Image (cartoon, rainbow, N blue to C red; front, side):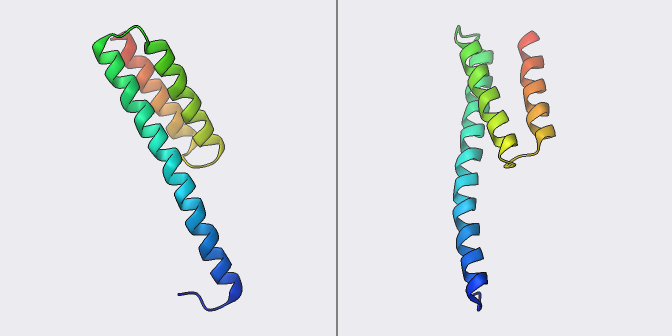
Amino acid sequence: MPLTSSAIKALKVDQRRKLENDQVRAKIKNAVKGARISIAKKDKDVAEKLSNLYRELDTAAKKHVIHKNKAARLKSRITKSISK
């Protein structure tokens, strides 16, 4: 456990940020899964799911939860899978 008051505060901040980051990662995971399922089923709402996925990835990259290149890579792979 931290001893100094600044270390205690830093621990609290780290714990709060971890919860927020975990929520963002969960949103990304659900959006990717939803997009892949709708692409596989050839649903009509693929564009809506794709738009939601892009929004979640861009938001996470902007917040530095994931790297911007990872967001770009995921978007590219999903888009490529649509054309197949």
